[in-house]
Length: 242
Length: 307
Image 1: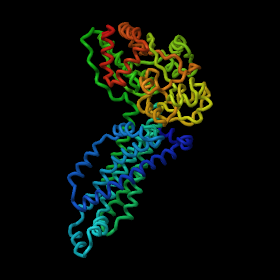
Image 2: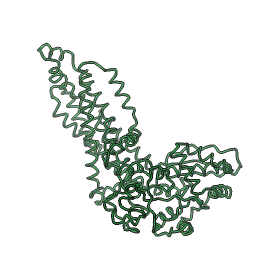
Image 3: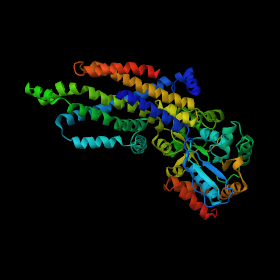
C-alpha cells in the first residue's frame, strides 16, 4: 500500500506527456469514441428488434456469442490483420477501438431491445388507437418507456469499456493501461497498483455521470420507484469509496 | 443494487488482474514428473523471460536436468529481467537462461561488456553471493537497433553512430522496459548521444515490433540478432561500433544451493553444444515454424546425446 501512495503522491507523475492527466484523457478518449460507435450500432438495432420482434433469435445468439470473444486475443489478431493496411498510429488505434466496440455493443443492444420489448402492450395499443404511425409509436412511446433499460445497457457497457480500455497499452497506445504494463516491465508495483486504482475510480465516476444523465433524461413519471431507490443507493455508495 | 454489484465486481476483477500480472510467481505451476531417480533428488525451479528464445533455452535446461533425475518445475514466460532477477534472488525460481553482457549491465550499469571475456568477468564480479554463473555457451544473441532496408538506404545507415544526426526525425520501438533501462533509451543517449523523436513501447522483439517496423509506426526497433524475421523482411541491423549491447553469450545462472555437481554437469554439457547458428536454427523452428518449444528442445537434446 505504501508503494501505491508514494507513486500517487509524487507530483512528477501528474505532469508531462506520460503523466496521469494525459493518460486519463487518452483513456476517456478511447472509451468515449468506443461508446459512441457502440451506441450508434447497438441502440438502433436493438430498437428495431424490439419494435418489430423480428430477428430476435439471431440477435440474442449473436450478442451472446460476441460476449464470449476474448478481447485481448481479438486485439492481437486485429492488429496483425488490420495493421498492414494503415499507416501511423491509426494502425493500432483502429483495432483497439474495434475490439472495444465488440465488447460494448452486446450490453447496449440487449438493453435497447429488452427495453422496447418490455413496454406495456396497453400503452402501445393506446398509441396505435390514437392514430400514431409505427415510427411515432417507437419515438413517442416505446423509446421513452425503454429509456431506463437503454441506460442500464449503456452504463454496463461504459463500465466494461473503461475497465478494458487498459488493453490499448498492450499494443503501444496510451491510456491508463500504460501504467499497468510499464509497471510490470519495471517491476514497479506502486505504479501498477496506482494505475489499477485510477481505472477503478474512473469507471465509477463515469457510471455516476451516466446515472446523473439518466435522472435528467428519463421521465420522472415513468419510474418513481426506481428514482428513489437509485438516490438511496448512491448515498450509500459514496462512503464505501472513500 | 445491480450497479453497485457491477462496480464492486469491476474493482475486484481489476485488483485480481493487478495481482496476477504483478506477481506471476504467486500461482504455483504443477510440478512436472521427474523420471524415477536417485534418492537425493534435487528440485530446481526453472524460470524464463517473456520471449520465445528464453523459453526455449529454459525448456532445454529443464530437459537436460530431467534426464539426470533432477526434479524440475518450470515457471516460464515470467516477464522482463527487472521482474525475474528479484524472483531469483528471493528463491521463487532457481535457474534462468541469461545473457552475459545484458545481465552484467543490469547488475552494474558501468560493467565492461566489450568482449566475451570481459562480459563474463563483469557478470561474475557483479553477481550476488547467492547466485552462480555456470559455463557460457558460444551462442550469442544480442539486442540490436534494426531498421528497414529502405530507411537504411534513405539515410545511408550502416552503424548506430550514423543514426545520430537523423534520430530526431525517427521513432524508436522496443519493449516497455527499454524506456528506463541502462541498456535501453537512457544508455543509447549516454553512449551514442542518440535522441529519438519518441519511444514507442511495443513487445519484447516480437511480432508487434516486427510489424511496427515494417509498417513504419517506428523507423528503428530493438530486435534480437537471432530473430529470423530480420532476414525474412530484409531488415538491416546497424553495427554496434561502441559495443553498447556488448557480448551476449547464453549462460545458465543458478542459485548456489541448487548447483550440485550433477546439475552443473548437465547444464555445462548444454552450453558446450550450443553455438549461435544452432540457437538461431532452433528459434526459427519455434517462431517461424510454430513448433512447440518443449518438443524442439527435446529433439535437440536427443540429437546431441544429452538425454
